[in-house]
Amino acid sequence: MTDEQQIRVAVNGYGVIGKRVADAVALQEDMELAGVADVTADWRARMATSKGFALYAADPDRAPAMRAAGFEVTRGLDDLLGSADIVVDCTPKKVAARNVETYREKGIRFIVHGGEKHEVTGHSFVAEANYTSAIGRDSTRVVSCNTTSIVRTLTTLKVAGLLGSARGTLLRRATDPWESHLGGIMNTLVPEPEIPSHQGPDAQSVDPDLDVITMAVKVPQTLAHLHYWSVRMPRMASRDEVLEAFRASSRIALIKMSDGLGALNAVKEMMADFGRPNDSLYEVALWEDMLKVEGDELFYAYMVDNQAIVIPETIDAIRALTGAEHDGSASIARTNAAIGVGAFTTT
Image 1: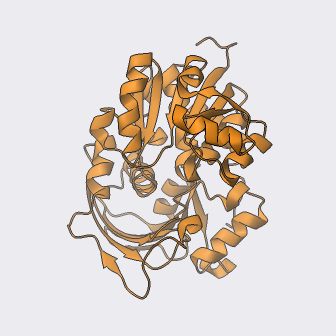
Image 2 (image 1 turned 180 degrees about the horizontal axis):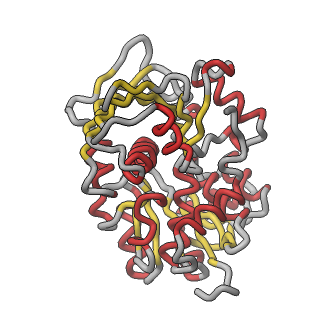
């Protein structure tokens, strides 16, 4: 890629993540949305076309039904891939792994997300931790929402020399809000059957040096995830030093219960008031006034918006894979400015 060329991005799958990726790509000055591919013929596809996005049939067999529903279907997925520099796969879990064979045959760079295993690409991505290692690769996996938050926060502590070992408990939302009528859990809690839960080893796929163990439980709500962390620091540190370390990351937002942000719903409401599309919280929202330091032990809690946190990472991964930007901090700043990361503060 040259500085003058826009990166042409294809999005395969226009669901919870896909629609947010497409919107974010459309806001980048150095990117152009080549189109979106899907198999639906309902309101979701109508949202794509209403925004002027070119719609492609991800499965040729679905094209007639999509056209019968009144959609102008440009052509098929192969045509979309042929017109793009890179494809972001936002299809459901395990579907992307099957699509990889097609991407490799077409010789197109691709990004999958955290529902797939690390082995699918051999590389897992969080911008602040390992942007450089993704430059020029043919593929990467943007890790899951929870893993993204873990790597962001622990990397910030690591850079500041404040990370020894980390132990986290995750309270995980049961399902996506728009699917609440289809399933989920009610009046119970469902622990993940193994310790560590999968998020800790997944974080180590980004940074093998992390000493991290996680435990997780599904809870009967759909707003966001909630994490509690206990970190053993390699030395004594003050509370102010820890807070300054977290402030060094543009993708960690310090919030306060004393500002009325005492629960997940309050933070989501604030995102709506700030005019964030889909009430998106791209940052890790970490409670400043809950954070506690006892000697060399650090305790804190934060909120993770599973529908939004991976969006800025995906945009940065596009630049890294295509080699359009070799400076990770420059890409992060550019992405942040385009979609409004860090544009709110309560402290």
